[in-house]
Length: 185
Image (tube, one colour):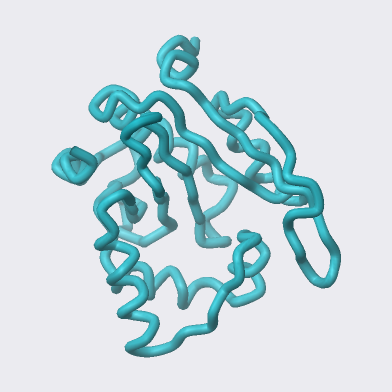
């Protein structure tokens, strides 16, 4: 059922083409991103991988049965701008965790909001998801603002959960329910 969502791709919006990601696209995003940037965006340990080890790791992620990962391309000049992932599909609760990353030079153009709007419409309708949830560091103001703009509500706080540069920060848990997404004005 989850894989059927890929049958909807590519998804074309006003400015973007959204499609199932490849390992090569993940590598391309990696070349546009430095380690410190990646490390900042997750509270989980990041293992530095290179070459074939990295490619095999990406292949494993893409093949996971309970994940969906999409690349985001600008239609006009066919530039890769970022990715969106929906992880850990729980069929009992009909929920998934949202993750996203925009290559820094493509931020602040509204591409992620445009992408999420299209994908949420499909996921909430076709998969009949009950909930999408996301976790972000309390210092990540851009991510918090995006989630709130998309209609997410802050559900909770994981206190001192996110180490960054020797300091601990809270992580916020956000979610949006199917009826909240479909009832938005």
